[in-house]
Length: 255
Image (cartoon, rainbow, N blue to C red; front, side):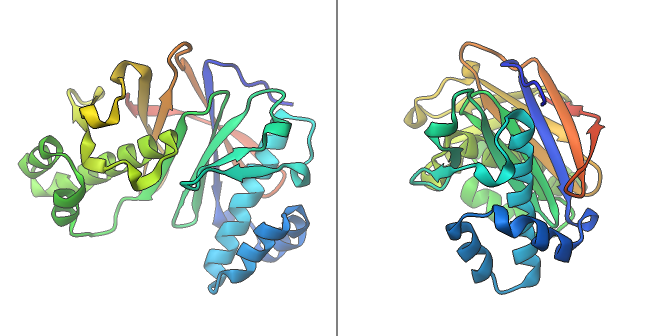
């Protein structure tokens, strides 16, 4: 059984390419609740069905590494904005998580406090980033993005987008939080600063943010609110198949 300290966040990575879809279905389907099975069956495309199944496998199997509960026994609830949590009946030892996926890669963050959010995005897709930024980013973020050379704008767009997603996922309020009501500033190459509009009634000193290097064309951001216990250590693991496991390096790009 793995030990998780109050001052730690554990990150778990899984790539769809490392799993055989038929074997995964055979192994995992009996772990799922009736509601999860219904959701699985409703997906039209195999890619979506397989991604859903892998995400359920990652959550259930990883949580069982911190508990005596088997993967099939976990019960989950969702708040009104869709943030999942472990059922209170299984919270003898506090354990919280957040999950994100993009283009076949899944990342799960696990810690001992509720305000945890993670977001991963494929970052090599050409998009109308200035139009999106004009709609969702703060004035300062938009001006800073436009001031960058064109060749650097796409990377900065994904930096900002994943940080914002990680924050609203940590809050558990979804897009009821307007993305333009908080702003990130890249003071130096490695330092991040967040500012909140008065509407959010939030305190920047209560939050920690990280951007973490991950292999391939992905941007990964992590958000944590810890008023009493700051996070001082990030650990990472990579899953290779349902049973395969190895430690992974954590390279922090910004914090």
